[in-house]
Amino acid sequence: MSRITSTILTGDRPTGPLHLGHFVGSLRNRVKYQGEYRQFIMLADSQALTDNMHDVGKIHRNLYEVALDYLAVGIDPSLSTIFVQSQLPELAELSFYFLNLVTVARLERNPTVKEEIRQRGFERDIPAGFLTYPASQAADITAFKAALVPVGEDQIPMIEQTNEIVRSLNRIAGRELLVEAKALVPEIGRLPGIDGKAKMSKSLGNTINLGALPEEIRAAVKKVYTDPLHLRIDDPGHLEGNVAFTYLDAFDPDQASLAQMKDHYVRGGLADSVVKARLESCLQELLAPIRERRQQLEKDRGYILQVLKDGTDRAREVAANTVTEVKSVLGLSYFS
Ligand code: TRP
Image (cartoon, rainbow, N blue to C red):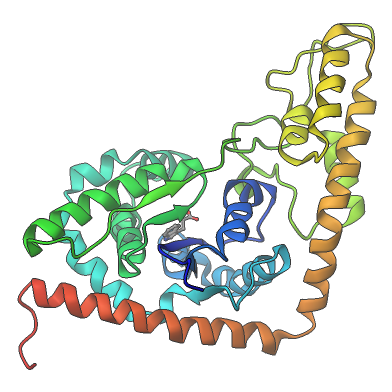
């Protein structure tokens, strides 16, 4: 396809099955852009290990689950290259050099890392690999000379830090060897959890997984946080912080009639149960084909592994080229 101009590199830590937060945050963009750009999607198993050394089996199990999720939502292996981070030693090699282009103070200031350290209660007992994972993420992105990175908005600081490393390395190179990247974040922002917390996340237990069964979807929608002040049907309802409406904004294909429903809710006279019935039917419709495709693919483990193996081989070649260039710029090529 001659229209393809830029490269995308993106990925996820395989620590659990993907959920609607991933779908809104990045998967929709990845499916949308896969024909337009050269896209690499990485299963970040090495990065996932930086805070999971106590439970390495978890990463191994979930790698396959996330690969299934990718294919089930419509990532097409003939358009996108799906690969496994740990199988590209070139990425570890590049990270090793990049670690000398960041300071500990800068890593400690990275808002994403800071927030994750807080969530995990690490205090000062942070695995060094965890603190430094922004350098490894910079290696992931730059190894592919990616200009675009479709991710959720929580990853924006990662891209900023990547670009600082790119500029430092390019200064050494005296040319634009590595490419600055741009985060591609969805307009709708991050999806809250069903409990109304700011983020849908497995560790908070407030997710709806892409493979959720119909009865799981129904149970989750029942629990979706709405408006605590909307006690009687006739009371005026509030949209702000009302997760049922946030989800309808994200998933309802009929936004015009949704706007009318919102007016009615705000005026009063519309029950939460009516809003939730609409939400449930949207989610059931959205997830049914994904779940069916997932169940179909699950039967053929060999196919999934082959997709990952082929993708990994292709990705490795690209990354190896970049590492050769970087080493040469750093004066680390002696025999050619
Ligand atoms: N940090 C990302 C996450 O938490 C995963 C990831 C690793 C990634 N390397 C990347 C995302 C490079 C985009 C680009 O899920």
